[in-house]
Image: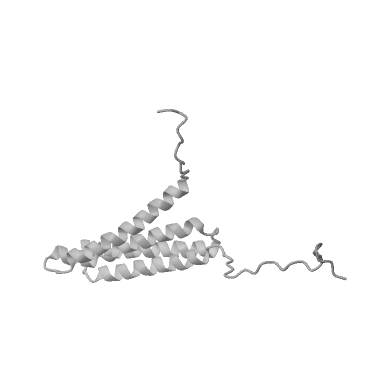
Amino acid sequence: MTTDAPQPDQVDLTRADLIRGGLIAVAIAGVVVSMAMVVIGLPEATPAQSVLLELAMLPISVSLAAALGLLAQRARRAGRRSRQVLAGSGVLGVAGLAAMGLAYLTGPRPLVHLGQAVLLVALLIALLVELRLQPARRRSWFELPPEPDQTDQDEADPQP
């Protein structure tokens, strides 16, 4: 190999790019896993298939959490109220996960659906806060070119 050969352009990946790529991969994987759980569990012939259908929403929740991570990378710094709401949302999400865990370990199975609903409400609250913290964008759909200055006279065509 000679040193005179042209080298391919190298892509400079930063830590933020790698994290963003990982979060995107997690979000896509969560949707694919959730769809597979529904397809496999759809007949509901065995107890395992019933469990797959009950928990099919959990990977979607992971995908939503990854999307929140993507939004958090671009968000402005959160104020005191936003941090309190995000902390409350996190506590609510943990309570939902705990309810789902308790339903499978000890308690009644309908508690799983309540836990999933609580978890989704927590993710929705966090999503609303993160959307509010996104930096403002100014978009102009149509842009007019600047008007020509009337003081400039054309040298070839002098006007009296």
